[in-house]
Length: 129
View (tube, rainbow, N blue to C red):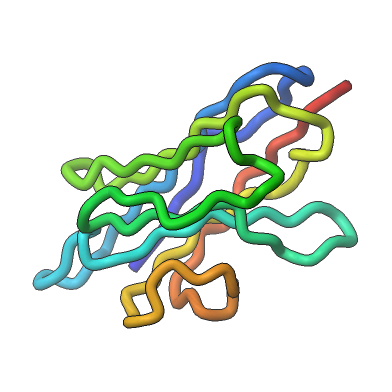
């Protein structure tokens, strides 16, 4: 299973970005709907932190981090094997490398990054003040 993030970049505070996470190389008997897709971020010198997670089978959002509630929206397009993270009203403290991760275990959308089996390479988001 391969995950590729895209959509990062440099934006001014108050601006918006939409990140994409495209999932490929799924086993023939699986689809995106079999996975929980989480977004995490890691700023320099800080721990990797959970941002949001979605249950792809029904499109239900499991959680948002308190720091992004009301500003970020997660959504999935199972036909395109892609999960999106729409980020609005960006703040300098949102600056980080953003990663998407996939897991199909019974644990579902956990906030523990160590629970996820598959990861993308990350995309840099930089918000200038």
